[in-house]
Amino acid sequence: MTPKSKILIVDDDPNLRRTLSDILKAKDYLPVAVATGKEALEKIAEELFAVALVDFKLDDMSGLAVMKSIKEFSPATECIMVTGHASQTSAIEAINLGAYSYIIKPYDMDLLLLTIQRAIDKQKTEEALRTSEEKYKALYENAPLSYQSLNDDGCFIDVNPMWLKLLGYERKDVIGQYFGDFLHPDWKPHFLTNFPAFKERGYVNDVQFKIRHKDGHCLDISFEGCIGYHPDGSFKQTYCVFKNITDVKEAEAELLKYQRNLEELVKEQTNKLEEKVAELERMNDLFVGREFRIKELRDKIKELESKRD
Image (cartoon, rainbow, N blue to C red; front, side):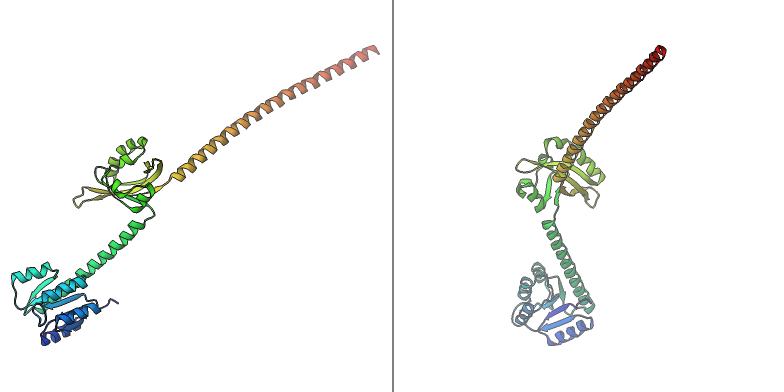
């Protein structure tokens, strides 16, 4: 259930305070009515109000002074100034001090209620925006991935703390600089070719670069990102995150080296085995030939013995 919005009524007219309080209650608001500026500021210190309706002329202080103090103590409270003595100067002064609106007595009740609701809607929208910005800021500052944004020329607009931590730079060393200048020399042509293609396509997935750490060594990184556009569809900026895949690349290189060594070993052992097989076949041929000759010799001996007898 949505909590009711509190409305502070600051007016020295008791009949107006009572009538307005009854109407606001009927409209499902929570009105709190006071007669003086001092009471108003005491209430503001105790409670949070969505809207304050402040009369321009009070017995103890000016309505503008009350409104100014309210905005200083509770910036989110929207103030609507009410007066029976309107002037362009006072209206401008009220708006400059932060008044949401300026209404002249005797006011149209429907208009006043509409103004109150719009002031509350504005407050809720701004609160939602603040919450969203706080969430984004927390995500931005604590994101586990490095984030960067480039302009149309490929120069840095923004980087997050993880980007700076991973690569060892300070923000002032990066913003406004050309991204290609942070790459390994062999990878600059790759960026020159792929950045225009990225802007045309609108997104990238697992695009890899070698980027230079401040101390001189290079890291392998993999990008994911998209393009942001202006309302007219023109390029605005890039939004990209990347992860450090140096360990993965080193592991892949080690695995490839191991596979090559294994292939060489298998090839070497295969060659040795083939040589052994060839030697065995040769020896077998020799053995078979020897046995055949022995048999021939025996047969010859038997033949001679038979003739002798």
